[in-house]
Length: 447
Image (tube, rainbow, N blue to C red):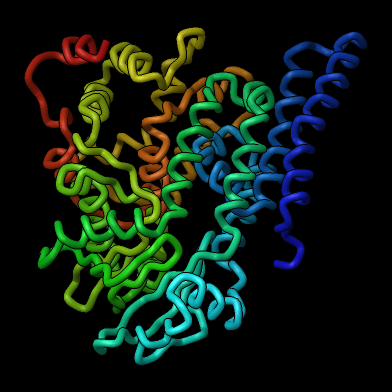
């Protein structure tokens, strides 16, 4: 990891290369047009080179830049494999190989946050981290009352680096406008910056985890470790044992895969209704199968607060899509801000793009697979200016919902899970099961 830039001046310099590179490519394109090249070919070349640089630079940075890259994963389908492939590989490496803090630094943070007598809180404390993430790492310990606990410690300087990244990224609106003309990048960045600021506050995370733990206490399907102690940069919660979802993906039985996939969908669909929040980081490392067959859930730093549950429009448009009324779907998407007023979309291309998110709710039982996902992605994998992915906007209120559903589909395909996923939508998503009235009437209610 020594080749990754960490100092603020280096990070700023990396991000500054984006608008400079775009300006140079635009000037080059103008020269080629004067020389006789077609406007469409020149535009496509500029877009491809811009995409190449955008995703290369974002992939080299942690923090805010990486989180923007994750949020924009919806648009990877519009990029050729030679661009999107290395970018995804870089993100995976960053997520899976975060370097651990030295023990001396861990002790210093604990002293600063808990006082010189911090060891009195623990009967045991393991200096070796058991897990690492983008802004912190977890240590196993034994609380003073004998309970095994997980101690989450934030990396020193993580907050400053994240906010610096977002301040830099906010200056790149024109660049993203050229690459993705349908996207309101400013609102996406504003929403991400606000959510990331919450992730940096472990007290807020503790509040969210406590709310989930209380709602799912003694639940037959889910287990959330209780919070024991917390401040802004330290979070202590009960230790959870079980089998991580990543191991189920690697060598679980089909029965285990189906069971885990169904519980994952149930958890993501029922949480807004039951807790008023959506767990917004469905990474396999955050989910475990406990010995009694429940889905254990970790890491509540990223949550989407939804006190009224899922938007009714979400379920209603899914149902209308299944009914085949694409004109009503387009009107509803415009009303929700997914298609901006000046943008026209190809309805057939839009149907193909939405299929991976909606198709599993159309049938009684659905089988997810990597092959199915590749087939779906292939329908929109090009950089032509009229590519539907480039025409869509991501409303701020849906940033985390999209992140959850895109990542959730990916995890389900990794699992290769088969189950009655439609039943969960019927039970938990408002508007989906409302079969009264025609789809046209339902669409009109959105406008």
